[in-house]
Image (cartoon, rainbow, N blue to C red):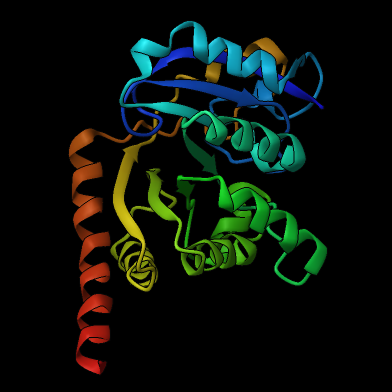
Length: 253
């Protein structure tokens, strides 16, 4: 099977534990206003790669990946679900740690055949880095041009399957930095028993150049980048909601 790949980063350090081979998949239905990889949206310009070719890229530098593994990102890797699954299964056969960096937007909880495919993927997935854009469905659709109900259901489904989850949340001025939304997000995350980390990242506008090169209008033109200090404050508010839920669950047991 051949996958449509945008690029490969040999020494990723922020895409899961350790040093990793990061595979950028082509294809994404989301149109997040702050996306910094618009060149991954379509399949146009993709490089065709087989599973063996990607594994060989890993094996070439295997000593460097001692505490790492392979991360599938994008784009949205689950657009190419079958290829992604074959890649992760091949990695597992070699004892390679696998990380799926996803928005969860492709999840279809009412499709039994699709769920069977997801189950197969999750069996060879060691870690999911789940990017939740916004907890409110209306704001989420405005921000990403897609609903968030299937994303939240994917989080719950992966949690039920006992897959380790790291939550990523990008904070964007004027969109998702209000306390109500952040605490509400934290309350939801608190219901997931397998969440082991929370990364709150400040919005940046370094992707503007790519939009210009592609001839696309940048949706957040004029929006100031968030600071690290703002991101830390937002993280505290998310953790407030998280702790509220965890305490409530504990008291109900």
